[in-house]
Length: 337
Image (tube, rainbow, N blue to C red; front, top):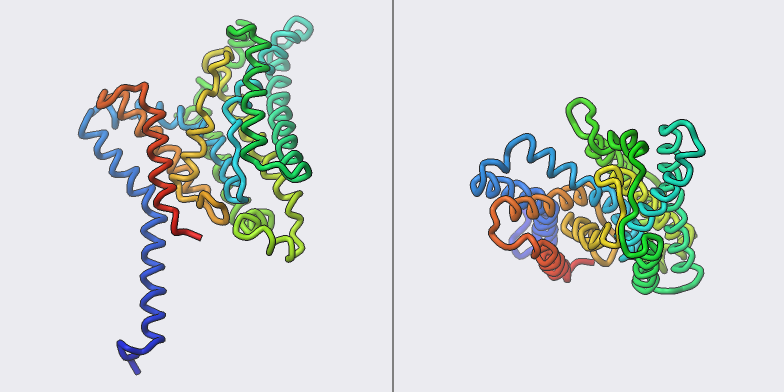
């Protein structure tokens, strides 16, 4: 028998359906925004939709996108990392110094590059471990810890480079360059790596016990502790995961220019956090999806690309646009949780 309009059960069902519809609209928002931006970009400049430009946008998205995958874990767990740009800069400078230092001692440039790549990943994991330990065992807020290391990392790179650039040896650079400029089945290597990292991140976050623990901690850390979740260990792992993602992004970035300077990775933290938030991850933690982060990263790259192609506003205001996007999305999320 149909429920009367005044029936309390009918009211509950109606509210539930409206919330479900609202939630679906929120989840599809970034994707719809990306589609509309692509249409607008094509109308404003036909060159936007060319295969070369599309591949260029996706390749440039790969660096931030990979970092954003790791940042998703951190933000979902209720944390934040402001140091990823400076971390990438220091990793880049350190691995270049290492490869230049061992190039003469080792006869194989391929071995030199392999050692440099492994070193970058280990260094990223180590930096993430330090962050995790300071936050969990030191009981310091993530904002304070990573704000401090942001300055430390970039200061050390500036010190190592004497304020200039650290340049990769030409012989090693020639062997290393295909990591960025190479193609596989018609797609640049960075896009493949970004795709694999996103798939792996999505599976781990949404299909494993560890991923469920990350979301539980972000939703309510106290309840997670009562449920016998090893909160400190899970948090440490999330920062290690982010550090490894920064290492992977740096490995792909270094052969692009073959150098590192104090401006390397500048504002990457802003772009990574913006990608995660625009993708629908709750700023206060507890929920998020990697696919949303991927869409968010591409969306921000498309905005920058459209600004570059059309000169609607100065390209120097790209960071300002991203900052406005973060504030708007955070304002829209104020009623969540």
